[in-house]
Structures are given as C-alpha cells and as structure tokens.
Image (tube, rainbow over all chains, first blue to last red):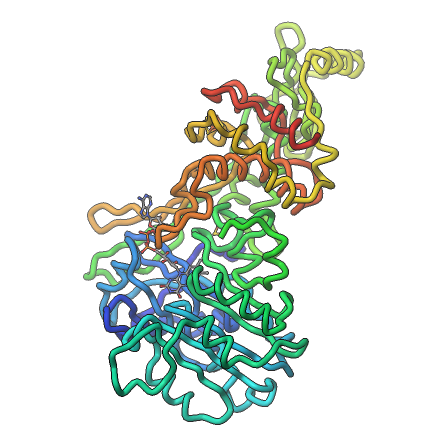
Length: 281
Length: 278
Ligand SMILES: Cc1cc2nc3c(=O)[nH]c(=O)nc-3n(C[C@H](O)[C@H](O)[C@H](O)COP(=O)(O)OP(=O)(O)OC[C@H]3O[C@@H](n4cnc5c(N)ncnc54)[C@H](O)[C@@H]3O)c2cc1C
Ligand code: SF4
Ligand code: FES
C-alpha cells in the first residue's frame, strides 16, 4: 500500500527573493531520487505539501510547469510558523514534498479555447505554471487567444519580473500588467486595480472563452461583476481556493466545503460549482 | 507516522522515514455494537479509491472485534434509528450475549472463529439459544425510548439547510468545548503535528475537531468558520447531511447518545435532527 503521507526528499537547489518587501521567495527543488520526480507527475493548478522536519507541512501551489523538467518550483509568502522557517532555509538544505495533490485547471476542456488569466498578488503561482505550459511550443497551438491580467500593489511586488517582461515582448500572449499605484516615472504598464483593467482589456465572454481567476478575496469579489458584465457564464469562470489544509488527501476533515474537500475535489472549481456550495472559503 | 533526525552529521539528516510498525493482531473485547458499527462509517473516509490511509487500514485489519450486546440501553440511546441497534452485528467478529453468569458468543466471521479458538471458547451453546437471543434482542430494542428521522433531510437542498435561520439559536449555548466530537465514535477529524527533542523528531497524528476555531484558521487570519454557530452547523451538517450527500448511504451517526449525555449545555443531536428534518 502506497503511503500517501510520506514526502519525497528534495534538495533546495536555488532560492530567489521575488519582491521588494522580501516576503516572497521562490524555492527550486531537485528530487534526491530521480525516479520520484517521475512519480511526481503533475498538471498546472495542482499543489503539494512542503514538508519541513520539526515544523510540519504546508500546502503550496506548484509554480513550475509540467513542461519544465528536472526541478519543481514553489513561491512562498512568509506568514506564520512554517513559511517563516522555510524563508530561513538555505540552498543545499534537504526537506520533503508530498504530492502532487488536488485537481488542476481543466486542460482537456480548455484546448481550442480563448484563455483569460486574471491574477492578483502572490496567487499568481499556479497561473505562472499555466502560462509556461500554454506557451510551450508543442502546446501553444492548442489554445486560441491568451490574455493575462496580473496586478500587484506596486511594481516591486510583482512576481517573476523577468518572465513578465519576456512575455510582454511576445505576440502570442497579451500581457496586461498593472499596479494599484506607483511613483516610478518609468513605469510603462497599467495603473489601476485588476477589476478595472479586466473591464478595459479583456475580450467579451462567449462559450469558447474561459477565465481563470486567482487572487485575494477583494480582487475576486470586484472582478466577478466585471466578468458578468462582459458576458462570462459562470461555467466559464474557473477559480482556485485556499482553505486551511493538513492531509491534502481528503481525510483529516478540515478543508471541507459541504460534501467537497478543497484538497481532493478542488482546489479548482468553476464559479457555477461554487454557487451551489456553502460560502466557506 | 514517521520519524527523522535533524542531526547534520547524519547521512539521513531531514529525511522523513516510515516508522516500522508491526500491526500485531489485537482484539477489542466488549466493544458495544454501536461503536463497532461506527467503523464501517469511518472506513469510507480512510479507504477510498484514490487514497488509502495505511495507518488506519492496517490497524483495522489487524483487529478482531468481540462485541457485547446491550441489555440496558440508556435513555439517550437512539441507535435503532441510526445505523445500529443494541444487538447489531455490523463490524463485529463475535457478538457476546449475556446469559445468566456467562456469555453466549455468536461467531460472525472467520476472524471471530479464529479468535474463539485461540481463547478456548469451545463449549457449544444451549440448543434454544437462537430463540432466546432473539427474545433478548427484542426486549433490549423495546427499551430504546428515543428515535430520530432523517428521511427528509436526504432530499432537502443542502444550501437551504445550510442557510436556515435556526442555526444561530440552536448553537447559542454551545461553548465549543469539543466534548461532543471527542466522545463521538464517527468523528474522525485529525491534525498532523511534528514533535522534536534532541534532534530526534516524529510526525504524528492527533485528534482534532471542527468545533475549534483553529481548525480552519488561514495563515492570513481569515477564517471561513470564524463564528461559533458556523462550527456547530458544520458538525451537524456533516453528520446528518453532507455525509448523506457524499456517500448516499445514511447518516454519519450510530445513535450512541454520548454527545447528548456529556454536552455541558445540553445540546441534543435528536432535537437538531428534528428541526433539520421538519
Ligand atoms: C491549495 C493551496 C495553495 C496555496 N498556495 C500557496 C502559494 O503558492 N504560496 C503561498 O505563499 N501560500 C500558499 N497557500 C497558503 C499557505 O498554505 C499558508 O500561507 C501556509 O500554510 C501558512 O503556514 P504557516 O506555518 O507559515 O502559518 P501558520 O499560521 O503559522 O500555521 C501553519 C501551521 O502551523 C501550525 N500552527 C501555527 N500556529 C498554531 C497554533 N497557534 N496552534 C496550533 N497549531 C499552530 C498548524 O499546524 C498550522 O497548520 C496555499 C494554500 C492552499 C490551501
Ligand atoms: S459538547 Fe456541547 S458545548 Fe461542547 S462543543 Fe459539543 S455541542 Fe458545544
Ligand atoms: S486537507 Fe485534510 S481533508 Fe483536505
């Protein structure tokens, strides 16, 4: 019987500080046992439990893409016990990861469709995974137009800045990067809240256009009416939830919303599905 | 669950390893039928198509359940309308029935047969046992004075029940002590914690309950079940509605009545059930 609680050992291969407040770091992990990298075969949208001895485990979205081989990446915001400890760890340290867990963005369904990605703050992690996945040369033809709205409070709080500017230069993806405000005179992208930019830049909804929305509750709350106005049906709005988790496999009971477990039946749900569920997220 | 060392001089530093736990055969002697019936309900959570919890499954498999039929149910028992009964055989390998100064053992499974052999229980039961047991069972069942109905809950709209106006009032007296969940044979929620001393650490699982605010508290401070009534609602909705929604096989309760007896503020699952079912 495979033990679903046992993490795979990994080595921290690299750590990048992403934001000016130094609160977000991206960790690149390499599997100690190469055959376990194969077992950890994932899709964009899934998460894993990062496992630190003496501290415990935390669920974190997988920020690398299945098309990137040889490593996995996670971007971690420093908030409490385990994330703070993780931020103090160094290159070469050994820890564990357990997964992949949860469902993923519905890639089979999304093929042949226009994709609109809407992200705010540090919830951009699995959206990065999705973008890299769709832009992979062997995948790009599978999707029609790709639009991305990504916002942060200030320019220094944007994640993956090098990649953002590389994507901005491409003609097969429309990047709408925005910040709430900035005093940087050289800022060349948008200024304004994500919902406003969505209203201005995002194509109208139709049955072949899907929006993937991830961000803080306030962003989600104000983006939804804008998408409604643009004519997006709730079947075409895909969201990812972040309930507190422990086991990640639907057993410990803490992440439930009604009969669903966010860890196992989610974290990805359509807005139509969420409309039928208690608002416990 | 696991053990590890954080000693940097060790080759295995920070590698998490399974604890080699032998599941020695064990027997639970005298378990009540309601308690053994609860294992079938809990099993659905730990033995699933996608994931199997080896800790739970292995110790469950290694256990022989030798139950003791109930001749004197309590006034708070309602097992006969909640998946069980005082002579219920579900989940048992042997059911012991009191017969004067001794017990008659009804052997129910191969495991039970093996256990009886090991225990040396070889005396044949008296010839009239079957009818005597049946009579004793009827008597015990007739002593059960309370019942619940859950037939309507099954088909009710989940959101309607969730949003019903009675939850705040019903939860008003609750002090979120968690006793109801602690004594409940069908509550399975747990936490996973690391404990470390002198560079030797273990990862273990311990009891937890949806009655506590920490259970669902996000790192950000946001809590989807921040208020007391939301947690009380979760517990009863899980037992009486969500479980039915998920498995389409009855409620997550065996009617043992312990939560009713032990709740310090007299919250009674039977009356909650009545309100939900009406
Ligand atoms: C699907 C999913 C994807 C996510 N993706 C990301 C992501 O990509 N990036 C990101 O930064 N975050 C992400 N999160 C959020 C992240 O999981 C949390 O921020 C993280 O778990 C916080 O851990 P912490 O130990 O730092 O916080 P804490 O608030 O300290 O709590 C974490 C754990 O510490 C223990 N603990 C702490 N305090 C107490 C206490 N008082 N009593 C008992 N136990 C305590 C508990 O065991 C608890 O589970 C995601 C969450 C989910 C569910
Ligand atoms: S035993 Fe009673 S007071 Fe304690 S948590 Fe349960 S319902 Fe609330
Ligand atoms: S995290 Fe344990 S049930 Fe979802």
